[in-house]
Length: 340
Figure 1 (cartoon, rainbow, N blue to C red):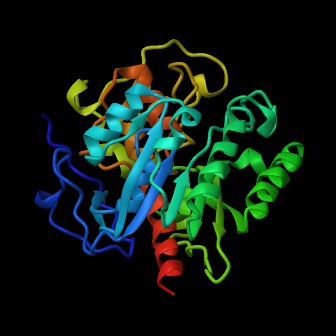
Figure 2: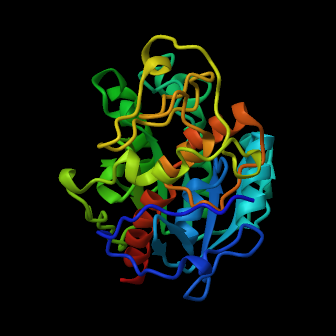
C-alpha cells in the first residue's frame, strides 16, 4: 500500500501525535475515556458521523481524541455502506430498511444520532419536503427517540431544510420532536469553520430532555484560515491510481454544472455530492476528476478509512457522509451537555 503523507495544517487546537501512531483500520479506535455513553445510530451510512462521535482518529496532522461514546446499535439500508462501516469502525451494523429493524434496537440509549435522507429536501432533489418517500424517513428517527428516550438526539440534514419552500417541512420536524418531550435547537454549520477543507453547509437539529443544556460548539477557524484544497490533497496529486487506498477517479466526460466544476487550489473544496453520477469535480492542477481518496480528504476522513466498494458506490458513500471532523466537534458539545 502507498504510504500517504499528510498536509501541514497546524492552526487547529488539537493534540498532535507522530504520524507513525496513526490508527490502522483493522484496529479499534482508541478512546481516552471509558466508553459509557450509549449511542443508537440511524441512517449511519459508511460511518462519518459515528466516527466523529468515537474520535480517536488523525486528520491532516491533527489528532481528534477518543470520546467516551459507545455505539450499541447502528443501521443503514445500503449493503456497501454497511460493509465500509463494519470494516472501519469495528462495530456491527444492522443492514436493512429502518422500519423493518426498529424492533431490534436496545431498550434505551443516552444519545440517538442520524442524518436522515435529504433527497426530497435538497435543492438538487425532488422538492417534496418531508412528505417525500426518502426524507419522510425522519419519522423513523422520531419513533426511535420516542422509544429510547435518550437525553439528547442529533439529526443532520442539508441546508435546503432552512429554505423558504421547506418552511412547513422544518416546522413539522420540530413539532414532531417537541410533541414527544424534547426542546429542539437547530442551526446551520459551515464545515470549513471547524477544520474541514470543504464549503459544506449542513443543518444539525439537536433535541434535549428538560434539564439538559446544549451549547453549540464554537467555530475554530475564520474565513481567512480555512484549510484549502491544495493543503488537503496536494500530496496525492501525482500518485498513480491505487484501488487499495480508494485513489481512483471517474473518467466521465465534461458535463454541465458540477460535472464541469473545478477545484480552486487556494480555497476549500466544493461540497462533495453523492448523486453526481460520476460527474464529481475536477482537480485544480491535474487533467482528471478528483479521486475518491481526495474526496474523502475533502470530507475529513482519515487516510486509514478504506471504503469497501468500487468507484460509484464509494462516491455515494463519501458524498452522503457527515464530515467526521465536524461531527467530532458536535460530539464534544454533546458530551459537555451530558456532563453538566
